Amino acid sequence: NVYSSYTMSDDSTGVNFIMGKGVIDFPKQEVEAFLQAEAYKKSYDKVYKAGRVVEQVSPNVIYEHFEVNSPMMISNRDFCIFKGVFERESGKRVAVAFSTSHPNCPEVK
Image (tube, rainbow, N blue to C red; front, side, top):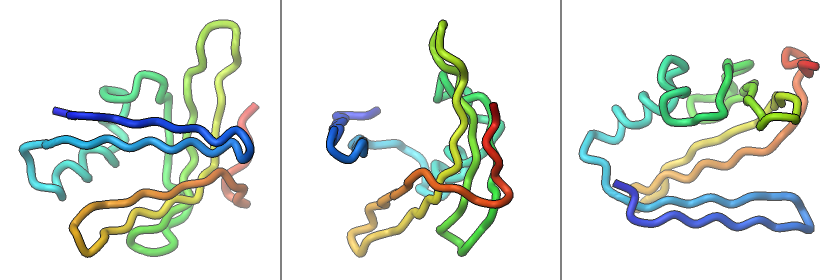
């Protein structure tokens, strides 16, 4: 169960910050594997359409391409992101991602 969540947007940079806190009664590795598995993403993200890892830079840093289903009257969108997931000494995980371009990640129109 998620006990709290927090979202903040910085209009000057267009950056969105999202944080959730809670207890999930499963081993951390199983939760991470579930969240990364393409087969399950649509079950917890209603706008997710499809995605793939474009390049694995290191065990915790990737380029990723994904498509989302936009609301009616707006065309679907796709994104190429550079994403890193890091574990802090406290055991907390921090994910950082930003939009970018990649030669193997052409824009879908």
